[in-house]
Image (cartoon, rainbow, N blue to C red; front, side):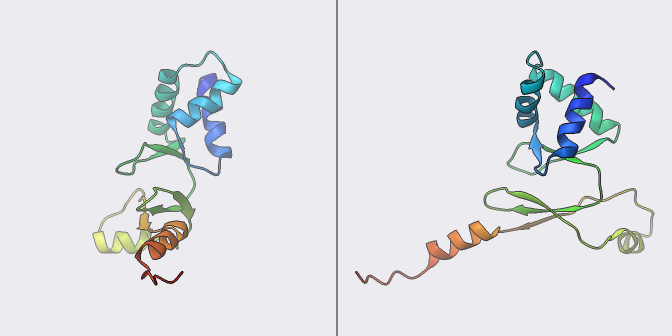
Length: 131
């Protein structure tokens, strides 16, 4: 594993966020000023292919990268906020329904986060017209 791959893996494993390649590049640049964005993308691809990290693709936003540990995700349909959640393991249920063994699954639950839900309520609340 290259020095850059090790540093990128460390950043991802220590982060509570789901960072984009650009965010990882900016963080890595603080430690390694000579790094270029292409190097970050190349190392991210290699780390994904080798199973050290996983790529989170969500329509309408940049790919984000996450550590390898069993968990699922909540995705706000409005603002795109991504957060971890742990549901019971569904592997056996999915295998029973499919009738085949599965290697893994990636569960993303779309909802409105509390902030967007509150904003939605305010926007749709009746106007009283009182001063």
